[in-house]
Image (cartoon, rainbow, N blue to C red; front, top):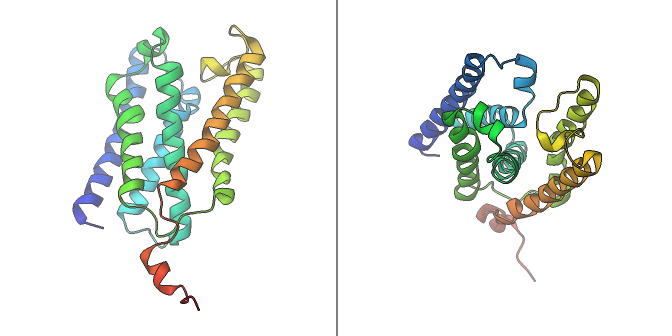
Length: 212
């Protein structure tokens, strides 16, 4: 991997972390910051996971196997894709969101990072395509986030996003429909992400036995 490319990875990782602090400080200035809820947003969590993946790749993998690194990279393409799409479709135009999201953090976390992670996957795909069946495990984190958020919200009354709040118009039916739609979107995105990767690398073809 070119040194300049790894430098860009590290720069973007640093900018994403800076954006987290910028967003936190922005909420503090509005007297609307609590560490627990702040760290409970999917956007913040997904971007911090993306930072970890970028750093691992920039430092040569840190001894992690190619297969695991491919799984990590594919998973973060999914998480950042969900972050960008859900924000654009369901959240970006809400007045309350516009009031509490800092423009720099908005751009970094909802646009630049998702696009860069996708670009990396397309420009430098893993050596071989992970299987779809195994890749469905990428949904474990979003599903855990969903059920944890709903369970905690039932106890505390606080939900990280309006579409997860059963007290909003539509109640639990609306929550179920939106959550189900996002789950189906995730399944479709996994398939699309995998289709961007050749099934076999050139090296894999060379290792394949010749046909009789």
